[in-house]
Image (cartoon, helix red, strand yellow):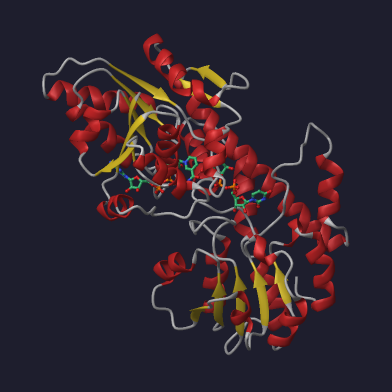
Length: 437
Ligand SMILES: NC(=O)C1=CN([C@@H]2O[C@H](COP(=O)(O)OP(=O)(O)OC[C@H]3O[C@@H](n4cnc5c(N)ncnc54)[C@H](O)[C@@H]3O)[C@@H](O)[C@H]2O)C=CC1
Ligand SMILES: O=C(O)[C@H]1O[C@H](OP(=O)(O)OP(=O)(O)OC[C@H]2O[C@@H](n3ccc(=O)[nH]c3=O)[C@H](O)[C@@H]2O)[C@H](O)[C@@H](O)[C@@H]1O
């Protein structure tokens, strides 16, 4: 099938590449010429395991191409995926300007029937706005072309995006007409060889399903984070508690790890947006308000521990920081707990030597020329002369650190471990190294 994917970010590029990999003819559009240049030069603009291979394979096979040409993109795919950003607006609602601009561009240039698929995470009712935007553009040029609007939210996780897309748990499709349903069924047939994963529903329910999923996952994390703080106060081990409750199938194992607070481009913004949607309709989502407040507080837990140990004034102190990305296997630092931590340490006069396997360039872009924030080529070099080590992101390479080497390099043998709940061995050994976290 001929497909167009609008937006070559984490969702658009992964979707485009994976859909090409099952035999479709995919054209990816982005208005960011720098991104398209990287893609045309055989690279990818993001770090996502497995993605480069799949992109190269499909470009070579002639099934995947990239463009900044809006008209060409609108004319290419019978199915047009909108996978552009929906960042939070000032009031917390999702900013739809990019989605609606993409929709208008389709309406302006389409030359036959189109299924316009909202893959971006969008509030309930956006399907109607997209339909109006396309219809207005068609009317403006006196064109009478049929089109359908479909909601097909994406559930992939960064760091595991290719696998999640290729082997989805479910594929949610909100569609109101038979022609679109049939095309979407055909499109996703290669992804459901073992069982039927397609869940068809109306557009509004599909839009809400996406927010419900992210809000539920965020709720579990905030609950576990608060419980972890309580466990620490009570002298209990949150990891053992996790094992004790996870075996109950009504609770399950996933998303029960305590940490430094959830970050990333989606949970924080989607929780906010759902609260906002409810408020606009006179409803209060009290649970989600608490989830958000607990998460904001959790991002300060590490710095509070550092202050308890070293005092409010950290001038002249130096901290080694391992892990900048909001989670392992990505270079994404959107809403990353490390950003709050770094800002707080710098504000209190400390200097920070940071290491991350892939996110240091992104950190440089975010923090600019900050003289008290430096970057180390290796985890060990960040430790030299530091007062303590702070571990923020649970990268695999931090799981079994050499505690003797750490002790030898730090001025004091102290580790503040914000990612420890997932590594029992490290927690046991860490207790022998110092008593930070
Ligand atoms: N990042 C993730 O893991 C997931 C994100 N989502 C949702 O998917 C959407 C996209 O997210 P990301 O891929 O992370 O965003 P992103 O910010 O990485 O990429 C968006 C891309 O769209 C491009 N763009 C903006 N307006 C455009 C236009 N009119 N025409 C062509 N290109 C345009 C931008 O230049 C950018 O490259 C958001 O709504 C997000 O909530 C959903 C599931 C997972
Ligand atoms: O809508 C989205 O964008 C995506 O948001 C999340 O994916 P992502 O943000 O990439 O990453 P997650 O693995 O979900 O992690 C989110 C945050 O929660 C934290 N987390 C996750 C799991 C856990 O047990 N504990 C925990 O603190 C992570 O460290 C991270 O900061 C969802 O998992 C995806 O299903 C969804 O498609």
